[in-house]
Length: 151
Image (cartoon, rainbow, N blue to C red):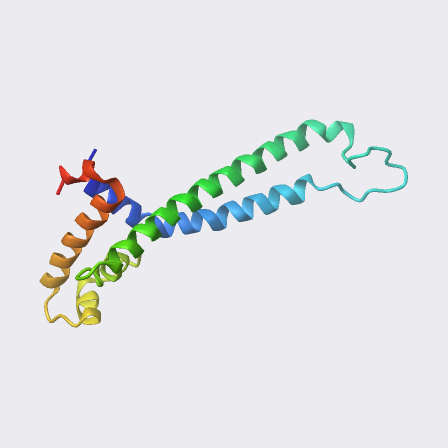
Protein backbone atom coordinates (compact mmCIF):
# COMPACT_ATOMS: atom_id res chain seq x y z
CA UNK A 1 0.00 0.00 0.00
CA UNK A 2 1.41 3.37 -1.04
CA UNK A 3 0.27 5.46 1.92
CA UNK A 4 1.58 8.74 0.50
CA UNK A 5 -0.44 8.26 -2.67
CA UNK A 6 -3.48 7.23 -0.62
CA UNK A 7 -3.14 10.36 1.53
CA UNK A 8 -2.84 12.51 -1.58
CA UNK A 9 -5.94 10.88 -3.05
CA UNK A 10 -7.96 11.54 0.10
CA UNK A 11 -7.03 15.21 -0.12
CA UNK A 12 -7.33 15.53 -3.92
CA UNK A 13 -10.83 14.10 -3.93
CA UNK A 14 -12.07 15.81 -0.78
CA UNK A 15 -13.85 18.52 -2.79
CA UNK A 16 -15.42 15.85 -5.00
CA UNK A 17 -16.64 14.06 -1.90
CA UNK A 18 -18.39 17.28 -0.86
CA UNK A 19 -20.04 17.42 -4.28
CA UNK A 20 -21.02 13.77 -3.84
CA UNK A 21 -22.91 14.69 -0.66
CA UNK A 22 -24.80 17.42 -2.53
CA UNK A 23 -25.60 15.04 -5.39
CA UNK A 24 -26.76 12.33 -2.97
CA UNK A 25 -29.06 14.82 -1.27
CA UNK A 26 -30.53 15.79 -4.64
CA UNK A 27 -31.06 12.14 -5.65
CA UNK A 28 -32.68 11.27 -2.31
CA UNK A 29 -34.99 14.28 -2.56
CA UNK A 30 -35.98 13.34 -6.11
CA UNK A 31 -36.64 9.71 -5.23
CA UNK A 32 -38.68 10.70 -2.18
CA UNK A 33 -40.75 13.03 -4.32
CA UNK A 34 -41.40 10.19 -6.81
CA UNK A 35 -42.28 7.76 -4.02
CA UNK A 36 -44.71 10.03 -2.18
CA UNK A 37 -48.41 9.28 -2.66
CA UNK A 38 -49.93 11.23 -5.55
CA UNK A 39 -53.14 13.19 -5.04
CA UNK A 40 -54.94 10.83 -2.67
CA UNK A 41 -58.72 11.05 -2.94
CA UNK A 42 -61.61 9.56 -1.03
CA UNK A 43 -61.88 6.83 -3.68
CA UNK A 44 -58.37 5.51 -3.00
CA UNK A 45 -58.74 2.77 -0.44
CA UNK A 46 -55.07 1.81 -0.09
CA UNK A 47 -53.69 2.35 3.42
CA UNK A 48 -50.35 3.46 2.07
CA UNK A 49 -51.71 5.63 -0.74
CA UNK A 50 -49.72 3.47 -3.16
CA UNK A 51 -51.76 1.83 -5.89
CA UNK A 52 -51.13 -1.86 -6.49
CA UNK A 53 -49.73 -1.19 -9.96
CA UNK A 54 -47.00 1.03 -8.44
CA UNK A 55 -46.00 -1.20 -5.50
CA UNK A 56 -42.99 -2.67 -7.30
CA UNK A 57 -41.78 0.76 -8.41
CA UNK A 58 -42.24 2.11 -4.89
CA UNK A 59 -40.18 -0.71 -3.33
CA UNK A 60 -37.45 -0.18 -5.91
CA UNK A 61 -37.41 3.54 -5.16
CA UNK A 62 -37.30 2.94 -1.41
CA UNK A 63 -34.36 0.59 -1.92
CA UNK A 64 -32.61 3.24 -4.04
CA UNK A 65 -33.21 5.86 -1.33
CA UNK A 66 -31.69 3.52 1.25
CA UNK A 67 -28.60 2.93 -0.92
CA UNK A 68 -28.12 6.66 -1.58
CA UNK A 69 -28.42 7.35 2.16
CA UNK A 70 -25.87 4.64 2.99
CA UNK A 71 -23.43 6.01 0.41
CA UNK A 72 -23.96 9.53 1.75
CA UNK A 73 -23.24 8.42 5.32
CA UNK A 74 -20.09 6.50 4.34
CA UNK A 75 -18.86 9.55 2.44
CA UNK A 76 -19.47 11.78 5.45
CA UNK A 77 -17.53 9.37 7.68
CA UNK A 78 -14.53 9.43 5.32
CA UNK A 79 -14.65 13.22 5.05
CA UNK A 80 -14.74 13.49 8.83
CA UNK A 81 -11.65 11.27 9.09
CA UNK A 82 -9.75 13.60 6.74
CA UNK A 83 -10.86 16.65 8.73
CA UNK A 84 -9.85 14.98 12.01
CA UNK A 85 -6.37 14.12 10.70
CA UNK A 86 -5.87 17.67 9.38
CA UNK A 87 -6.99 19.17 12.69
CA UNK A 88 -4.79 16.78 14.66
CA UNK A 89 -1.60 17.51 12.75
CA UNK A 90 -2.29 21.28 12.84
CA UNK A 91 -2.32 21.15 16.65
CA UNK A 92 1.23 19.80 16.91
CA UNK A 93 4.00 22.31 17.55
CA UNK A 94 5.87 23.16 14.36
CA UNK A 95 3.07 21.78 12.18
CA UNK A 96 0.64 24.70 12.34
CA UNK A 97 0.93 25.45 8.60
CA UNK A 98 0.54 21.85 7.45
CA UNK A 99 -3.25 21.92 7.33
CA UNK A 100 -3.32 25.19 5.39
CA UNK A 101 -0.71 23.96 2.91
CA UNK A 102 -2.45 20.63 2.33
CA UNK A 103 -5.86 22.24 1.86
CA UNK A 104 -4.48 24.93 -0.45
CA UNK A 105 -2.40 22.45 -2.47
CA UNK A 106 -4.76 19.50 -2.83
CA UNK A 107 -8.29 20.68 -2.10
CA UNK A 108 -8.28 24.26 -3.41
CA UNK A 109 -5.61 23.46 -6.03
CA UNK A 110 -4.00 26.86 -5.68
CA UNK A 111 -0.84 27.68 -7.58
CA UNK A 112 2.38 27.39 -5.60
CA UNK A 113 3.25 31.11 -5.81
CA UNK A 114 -0.07 32.03 -4.20
CA UNK A 115 0.45 29.53 -1.41
CA UNK A 116 3.97 30.88 -0.85
CA UNK A 117 2.73 34.45 -0.61
CA UNK A 118 -0.08 33.42 1.76
CA UNK A 119 2.44 31.79 4.07
CA UNK A 120 4.89 34.68 3.76
CA UNK A 121 7.58 32.83 1.83
CA UNK A 122 9.45 34.38 -1.06
CA UNK A 123 10.06 31.12 -2.93
CA UNK A 124 7.72 28.33 -3.91
CA UNK A 125 10.44 25.80 -3.03
CA UNK A 126 9.59 26.38 0.64
CA UNK A 127 6.01 25.44 -0.14
CA UNK A 128 7.16 22.20 -1.80
CA UNK A 129 9.25 21.36 1.28
CA UNK A 130 6.38 22.04 3.68
CA UNK A 131 3.92 20.12 1.48
CA UNK A 132 6.23 17.09 1.41
CA UNK A 133 6.61 17.12 5.20
CA UNK A 134 2.88 17.70 5.67
CA UNK A 135 1.77 14.87 3.38
CA UNK A 136 4.13 12.44 5.12
CA UNK A 137 2.76 13.57 8.49
CA UNK A 138 -0.80 13.17 7.19
CA UNK A 139 -0.04 9.65 5.89
CA UNK A 140 1.54 8.48 9.15
CA UNK A 141 -1.28 9.97 11.21
CA UNK A 142 -3.96 8.46 8.98
CA UNK A 143 -2.42 5.03 8.30
CA UNK A 144 -0.12 4.47 11.26
CA UNK A 145 2.89 2.18 11.17
CA UNK A 146 2.14 0.99 7.62
CA UNK A 147 2.90 4.52 6.37
CA UNK A 148 6.34 4.55 8.00
CA UNK A 149 7.63 2.32 5.21
CA UNK A 150 6.70 5.01 2.68
CA UNK A 151 8.24 7.84 4.66
